[in-house]
View 1 (cartoon, rainbow, N blue to C red):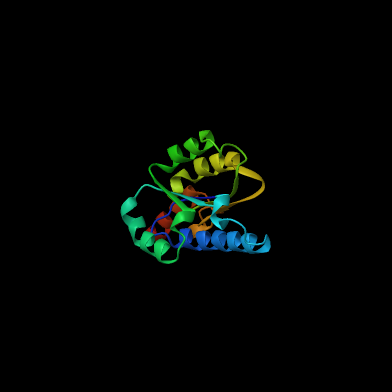
View 2 (view 1 turned 90 degrees about the vertical axis):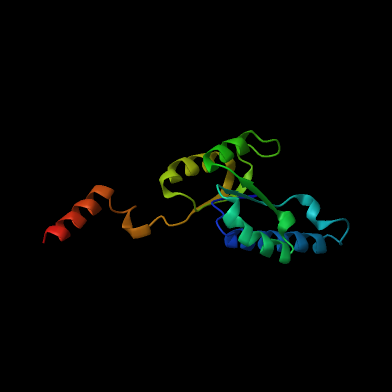
Length: 152
């Protein structure tokens, strides 16, 4: 299971779901082809505050044949992640990968909850961590620098 925090238009969701579908097909074919390869429930759980933007991606999810690999949920991602911790079949140490690409202000909380969700050896990928140098340079230094350049 993969959790994507911040779906937006669903391009990353599509890519992740295509990978999961390919994994299922390989598993199915390597085990003699018995049964439906989709039964194992590999999935992308996509969390976003907007259904509207995701509508763009949904038509491509369907076109690519991966819409049944995607569990799209609308709501505040902080709340949605907490619900995943309590959900049957999920909970702590149950997720293979989390991809965080949502509102940057909440990254700390997303990361901390994803730490609890992710299995030992799993991945947590956080997008835009070096965005404009803000991780390496504290905000007050950037603000002082910008103020100084305006004065000079």
